Image (tube, rainbow, N blue to C red; front, side, top):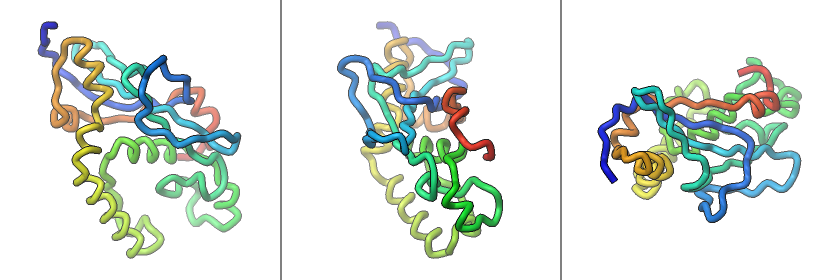
Length: 187
């Protein structure tokens, strides 16, 4: 196979409803969800090439999924994405939002968080979270595998890219319309 030089302009993740993986495809992350109280999000990665192509991982190289509660306080993945100053009633009636899905995608991809202490209920919780993020960044295995599916797709097209090169590209998250219809309207 000839290795091509291609200028990559961006990478990202597409979040959508879980679909059955192709035969023999490995599952990279899976949290079982057998009940209707959970939304199972499948995460497919893509890379945009300067010539206008979008190369996507379509499950052949592994499927990454996240299971999330649809309602209640358990639906808050990382940060609260509802109206300001929530009451207990607001939290109990909370519905999963676009922000929660984006947070789950970022976390499953191992992206670092850039949050301020005042967004957390207590400074101690903020410090504990930051410590956990630092530890996860030091995990070589997670870092090495972050781009495994996307690098396999690039290799199929004869394009070589290192983890470092992919890490330097702008990362964006897209959520398909079918999933958006199930999410709460605010962000």
